Length: 508
Image 1: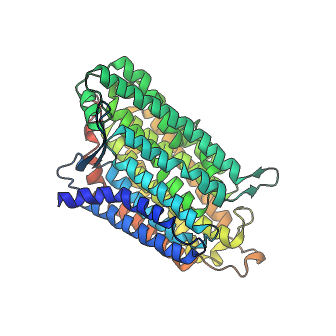
Image 2: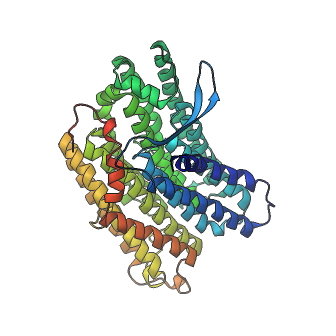
């Protein structure tokens, strides 16, 4: 069974990469056939995600399905080392779900569909690789593989938006995303090389997360070294997580991106940043993390409040959801920064819950935009009478976003609030205020877009397609399931994050 799980771990990366390479040799004009093949590859990836998540033994915890494939022997000793723990397992499952849904709703992509799916699956392979890599070299390699295709996916297949007073082009959104994320990647790479140099000075030169983790656990990594290296990872990975003030690329990228890319962008890609802070920053530099946590949680609090207030002032649906993502990623950052068992578990659960709700929102907005050619909430009034199922699904996603009990967002935010109140109470109060602001802009969006009398221009408007509604129904079902019964996820998370906390932390 272990051999099967190890193979499944490797296939998580190999299958989307093989699918991406295979599509390069498909005829360019066969749009429908390309889409069918993409569904096949995405379905296999989803099945593999379900297998590795379902087979994870929460009674044992720690890293499982560990396998290593030597790549560069000698002094560097770099290997493709793979492993899965309770933090990465939910993220692998999330990527499988969002990828499959994103591919299904991409039936409207007709322009250069082959190249679109080639890049989309390369991105997905990179995301899988980051979550399961146990070697810093390959973690960075997959990190870049996940980030760089976004430039072309937005710049080629995205859309420009005329806001009347200014034009926001897709090229602007793509370039801004690339500049911010590459700048963050530079900081991450400097930090990785610094860690390798430090381990070399200690006589154990390695890029292995396990080897570096043993050095950190034994206290051999110098405290001053940790204090100047941790901010490199905090800012470098934080840029991808939408950490204020390095967040501005995200809403602009969302506005320009096609539907599937927006789903992966907000649903999964931003989670790589938060995951990197946990896996590399806190795991390998615990004393540096403890020193910088007041700064990180303060920035996370600004994320929550700034993102919510910015969302309140927007009229474009994608901008509202984009700034909402910035706000919700603030809760993730706050949970991480508590270095508290409950808070960190809530952060991981929040990553999963937010990934589902924001993917659903962008799916529904994409459907609305495809039919109406506008995202202006001042124009899209009364859609409930024309798109009732779309409206219902959007309402569920919005209520999950504001933390309604019984939906996935409530438990995650509750755990983050609890952890924050146990460690930084004044900031915890501000976080609760941020949740109230979320309710304001979500209810405003629902009222102005879907309620009231429908405009005559939408008289012939039909509901979302069957494929879109099927994906939406699946995501809604998972959100309700997690909200009502979060135990299957939490039992996996809680057995694996405790080794990341510091001795000063409270135990559950």
